[in-house]
Length: 103
Image (cartoon, rainbow, N blue to C red):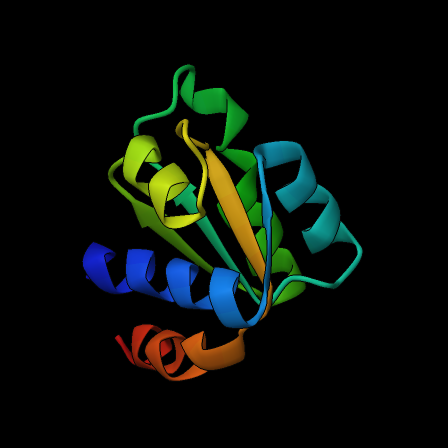
């Protein structure tokens, strides 16, 4: 499942739009621009991402967790790991994300 999420991030980066970093993700969700939030479970301390699933549920936005911030950063085109990314325009990742919502 997480491999599909990494693939969706790569596709959205190439054909749509993403924002990287927990602060950017939080702002996009609060402004209603987010389509799908993906955050890493291995961030430390955990408190910095704990608000994301609750905020997404409140706003009706899809939210998923992946095991590795390093792999999430790589999928987002970064040389370092990132705690979270938000997809604001799906591009070609729309089909992959639709499969995720069905699970």
